Image 1 (cartoon, one colour):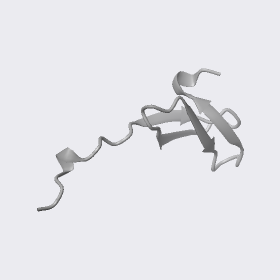
Image 2 (tube, helix red, strand yellow; image 1 turned 90 degrees about the vertical axis):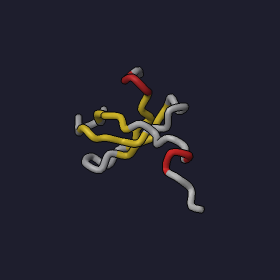
Image 3 (cartoon, one colour; image 1 turned 90 degrees about the horizontal axis):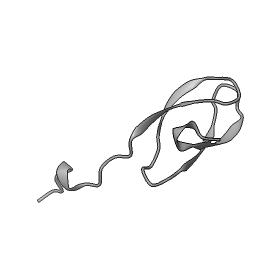
Length: 56
């Protein structure tokens, strides 16, 4: 018997982010228990540690 989709761990929520460097908006899969998300902007190619809720 195969594993049903209801028994799998829930997917991490998708969150809207904004690049602090160039302002580009994107959606990322941000794990629920992680307060900081390391992200590289594909537009300006800078790297940032983003904080949940937009906190600095």
